[in-house]
Length: 155
Figure 1 (cartoon, helix red, strand yellow):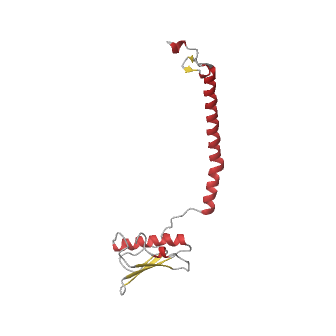
Figure 2 (spheres, helix red, strand yellow):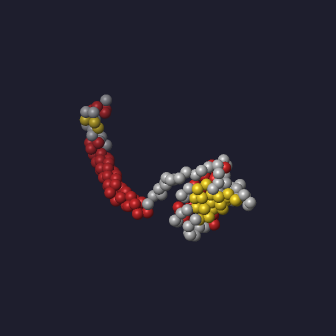
Figure 3 (cartoon, helix red, strand yellow):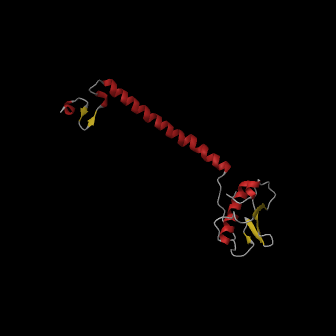
Protein backbone atom coordinates (compact mmCIF):
# COMPACT_ATOMS: atom_id res chain seq x y z
CA UNK A 1 0.00 0.00 0.00
CA UNK A 2 2.95 2.30 0.46
CA UNK A 3 3.50 2.63 -3.26
CA UNK A 4 -0.08 3.76 -3.83
CA UNK A 5 0.09 6.36 -1.08
CA UNK A 6 3.56 7.50 -2.18
CA UNK A 7 3.50 10.99 -3.75
CA UNK A 8 6.09 9.79 -6.29
CA UNK A 9 3.48 7.42 -7.77
CA UNK A 10 1.11 9.35 -10.01
CA UNK A 11 -1.41 7.20 -11.81
CA UNK A 12 0.31 4.67 -14.03
CA UNK A 13 3.66 6.49 -14.03
CA UNK A 14 6.30 6.99 -11.41
CA UNK A 15 7.38 10.59 -10.98
CA UNK A 16 11.15 10.38 -10.50
CA UNK A 17 11.49 14.07 -9.76
CA UNK A 18 9.56 13.63 -6.51
CA UNK A 19 11.11 10.52 -5.01
CA UNK A 20 10.50 9.51 -1.40
CA UNK A 21 14.21 9.88 -0.52
CA UNK A 22 14.29 13.51 -1.52
CA UNK A 23 14.13 15.27 -4.83
CA UNK A 24 17.92 15.30 -5.32
CA UNK A 25 18.08 11.66 -6.53
CA UNK A 26 15.28 12.14 -9.03
CA UNK A 27 16.90 15.23 -10.51
CA UNK A 28 20.26 13.46 -10.73
CA UNK A 29 18.66 10.59 -12.61
CA UNK A 30 16.90 13.01 -14.97
CA UNK A 31 20.12 14.92 -15.67
CA UNK A 32 22.05 11.68 -16.32
CA UNK A 33 19.31 10.45 -18.62
CA UNK A 34 19.21 13.72 -20.55
CA UNK A 35 23.02 13.84 -20.86
CA UNK A 36 23.19 10.26 -22.14
CA UNK A 37 20.49 10.98 -24.73
CA UNK A 38 22.39 14.11 -25.78
CA UNK A 39 25.72 12.28 -26.14
CA UNK A 40 24.16 9.39 -28.06
CA UNK A 41 22.48 11.87 -30.40
CA UNK A 42 25.73 13.78 -30.95
CA UNK A 43 27.68 10.57 -31.63
CA UNK A 44 25.00 9.36 -34.06
CA UNK A 45 25.15 12.67 -35.92
CA UNK A 46 28.97 12.57 -35.96
CA UNK A 47 29.06 9.04 -37.41
CA UNK A 48 26.34 9.89 -39.92
CA UNK A 49 27.63 13.21 -41.20
CA UNK A 50 31.39 13.18 -40.49
CA UNK A 51 32.86 9.67 -40.19
CA UNK A 52 30.77 7.77 -42.73
CA UNK A 53 31.23 10.26 -45.62
CA UNK A 54 35.01 10.23 -45.03
CA UNK A 55 35.04 6.42 -45.14
CA UNK A 56 32.99 6.42 -48.35
CA UNK A 57 35.32 9.00 -49.93
CA UNK A 58 38.33 6.89 -48.96
CA UNK A 59 36.95 3.85 -50.73
CA UNK A 60 35.87 5.98 -53.70
CA UNK A 61 39.46 7.17 -54.24
CA UNK A 62 41.18 3.86 -53.40
CA UNK A 63 38.57 1.63 -54.97
CA UNK A 64 37.26 -1.72 -53.89
CA UNK A 65 38.42 -4.89 -55.61
CA UNK A 66 35.95 -5.75 -58.33
CA UNK A 67 35.27 -9.24 -59.57
CA UNK A 68 35.91 -9.55 -63.25
CA UNK A 69 33.71 -11.60 -65.51
CA UNK A 70 35.74 -14.07 -67.50
CA UNK A 71 34.91 -13.36 -71.11
CA UNK A 72 36.20 -16.65 -72.43
CA UNK A 73 35.91 -19.79 -70.32
CA UNK A 74 38.82 -22.17 -70.00
CA UNK A 75 38.64 -25.30 -72.15
CA UNK A 76 39.23 -27.98 -69.53
CA UNK A 77 40.57 -31.37 -70.41
CA UNK A 78 43.22 -30.26 -72.88
CA UNK A 79 46.18 -27.93 -72.72
CA UNK A 80 46.84 -25.09 -73.15
CA UNK A 81 44.14 -23.59 -70.94
CA UNK A 82 43.64 -19.98 -72.02
CA UNK A 83 41.59 -17.07 -70.75
CA UNK A 84 42.09 -13.31 -70.80
CA UNK A 85 43.71 -13.51 -67.36
CA UNK A 86 46.12 -16.45 -67.80
CA UNK A 87 47.50 -19.12 -70.12
CA UNK A 88 48.52 -22.53 -68.75
CA UNK A 89 50.79 -24.73 -70.86
CA UNK A 90 51.96 -28.27 -70.09
CA UNK A 91 55.39 -29.42 -71.21
CA UNK A 92 55.60 -33.22 -71.27
CA UNK A 93 59.39 -33.53 -71.48
CA UNK A 94 59.96 -31.81 -68.12
CA UNK A 95 56.54 -32.63 -66.63
CA UNK A 96 56.08 -28.92 -65.89
CA UNK A 97 53.08 -26.62 -66.06
CA UNK A 98 53.82 -23.02 -67.09
CA UNK A 99 51.23 -20.43 -66.15
CA UNK A 100 51.62 -17.06 -67.86
CA UNK A 101 49.61 -14.62 -65.77
CA UNK A 102 48.28 -11.26 -66.96
CA UNK A 103 48.20 -8.31 -64.61
CA UNK A 104 49.03 -4.61 -64.57
CA UNK A 105 50.10 -4.67 -60.91
CA UNK A 106 50.92 -7.11 -58.12
CA UNK A 107 47.36 -7.30 -56.79
CA UNK A 108 45.91 -8.12 -60.20
CA UNK A 109 48.69 -10.64 -60.81
CA UNK A 110 47.95 -12.37 -57.48
CA UNK A 111 44.22 -12.49 -58.22
CA UNK A 112 44.78 -13.92 -61.70
CA UNK A 113 47.35 -16.38 -60.31
CA UNK A 114 44.76 -17.71 -57.86
CA UNK A 115 42.33 -18.14 -60.75
CA UNK A 116 44.93 -20.01 -62.79
CA UNK A 117 45.74 -22.25 -59.85
CA UNK A 118 42.06 -23.02 -59.38
CA UNK A 119 41.66 -23.76 -63.11
CA UNK A 120 44.63 -26.12 -63.00
CA UNK A 121 43.25 -27.92 -59.94
CA UNK A 122 39.85 -28.23 -61.64
CA UNK A 123 41.30 -29.46 -64.92
CA UNK A 124 43.38 -32.14 -63.22
CA UNK A 125 40.83 -32.92 -60.46
CA UNK A 126 43.33 -32.25 -57.68
CA UNK A 127 42.99 -30.81 -54.20
CA UNK A 128 46.28 -28.94 -54.40
CA UNK A 129 48.88 -27.96 -56.98
CA UNK A 130 51.70 -28.51 -54.47
CA UNK A 131 52.47 -31.95 -55.90
CA UNK A 132 52.88 -30.51 -59.39
CA UNK A 133 55.80 -28.65 -60.87
CA UNK A 134 54.10 -25.32 -61.66
CA UNK A 135 55.88 -22.13 -62.67
CA UNK A 136 53.86 -18.91 -62.52
CA UNK A 137 55.33 -16.16 -64.67
CA UNK A 138 54.00 -12.67 -65.38
CA UNK A 139 53.01 -12.04 -68.99
CA UNK A 140 53.59 -8.29 -68.57
CA UNK A 141 56.81 -6.70 -67.42
CA UNK A 142 56.13 -6.25 -63.72
CA UNK A 143 58.42 -7.05 -60.82
CA UNK A 144 56.81 -9.98 -59.00
CA UNK A 145 58.18 -11.25 -55.66
CA UNK A 146 59.41 -14.84 -55.58
CA UNK A 147 56.66 -15.97 -53.19
CA UNK A 148 54.02 -15.03 -55.77
CA UNK A 149 55.78 -17.09 -58.43
CA UNK A 150 55.29 -20.25 -56.33
CA UNK A 151 51.97 -22.05 -55.79
CA UNK A 152 49.90 -20.79 -52.87
CA UNK A 153 50.26 -22.55 -49.47
CA UNK A 154 53.05 -24.84 -50.64
CA UNK A 155 56.25 -25.10 -48.63
